[in-house]
Length: 396
Image (cartoon, rainbow, N blue to C red):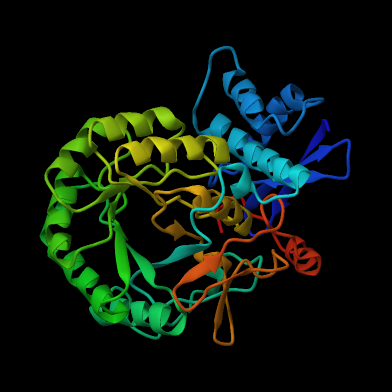
């Protein structure tokens, strides 16, 4: 089996997929996407394509190294790594299909048969959109409850847990990168406590504070700590691992980061400095399934858990779930709320895109699919409707 072509597919509302074709009937799907920068990644995929034509797609590690080292010594970076990641996912999909097994069986077999999901929440009530529409299209023009109010935070959490079935949530706060917010830090603790109350005592709640000034991060962690967050995500700008380690060293709250880190090396650096308890590589940015499996192994040696970042399409989620299944140190899986759909009392993830969308069970988990490769089949009828909708460079 040899690679013959890499096809680019722009999928509404804003995703980019690749389909790797071979000289057989088998093809593989992947997602080489960088939020709000799709065209440069598409160009990088096309630059990498000649290195792969005529090669055996099941030699995934060798092709990863070929792609990574291409470019006269210019390695890493978000553009190359996102392009490489999407192709890598497609190669694993092909390898699984060629072997007739799901990807997780090629990674050592299942440690988990179900994957616990978490859902984003914030200062408004949740909603859904029709497949292919951007999430913002469903935002009500007149909110049912006042935004950024403790009662609204509590009610949003109640809906997501008691009605939609999630057993893990992540609150999003955006304090900005200035010091002026210091007088308002206490309200974040109040809002987080409200989510805790609305979700109930048996639900894990994490919090993403979105890269504030390190001094503000320490203040926020101090007010959040009494409420026992599952983890505090990205408590400072992403550039300085040494400062992240200083923040982590001042608290017993688990610290999470890594969604904008590319490759295993920076994760090793962070773990060597005891900066992280939770690793969040993005399978579509950090190096695909190949590299994220290695990041997970490095984390296991440092007693760190894996919670893959995944704000993209159901295809990226399917790839993440295949890897999650094989990770002994898996913690919880993120997904993009644009992919949620309510069907009666069921919460579906990936409706319209997938013939068999992921279904949230009574414990807030989805089953790991056992079909070959990524374990999914596209919904041809649903995809036809989706592909007739507008595509945007802005992430849906």
